[in-house]
Image 1 (cartoon, protein in one colour):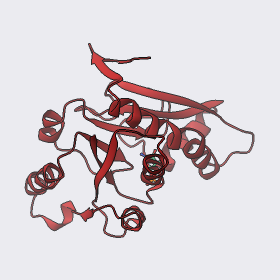
Image 2 (cartoon, protein in one colour; image 1 turned 90 degrees about the vertical axis):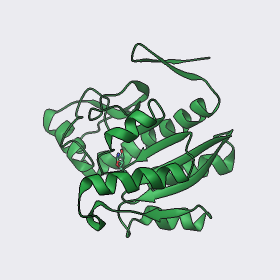
Image 3 (cartoon, protein in one colour; image 1 turned 120 degrees about the horizontal axis):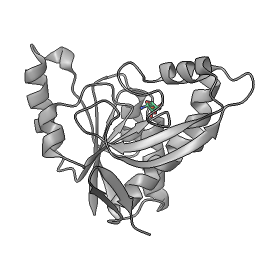
Length: 208
Ligand code: GRF
């Protein structure tokens, strides 16, 4: 049974997709051991509570230095014994010590087809604003392993979504969530929970 810890900062629609997938059996061999947010007002924490999932809030703002936060944050994560850590809209930089400790066991959902519209400064609506400004006709989402870079780790799954005439950033964001993020994130967790995912020379292999 894969112990999954989900890190969130906002509304938690990706967390909800994971919860629903576990409860419906779309994800097998896994359970959500806990949800950690840096934002005490994150609706994601309410979603966890409604489903009887342990929620915890820990924020860099509560600590005198980032080093102190990093230490405490890693401690709290370790207490939940994660086999897999899922960043579902988590907006705090993951401490290097945590990336080392959980090499290829931290995954992130990014709302673009990496390597487009990713890296520092590309998060939330900014991703979709940039895509519309460039005039691309296809966007999408990516699930990848987290390494020391920003959105640079080995890619696990991607799913394309069409841009439609007259799309606003908000409308496009919602379509990417509905048609891509909420599908490939649970799918990636299920593949990992069932031992189908390996990483070789920085590339992901998915067993049939
Ligand atoms: C999503 O758009 C995700 O791609 C990005 O942050 C947003 C989180 O949304 N990483 P939610 O909190 O899951 O609703």
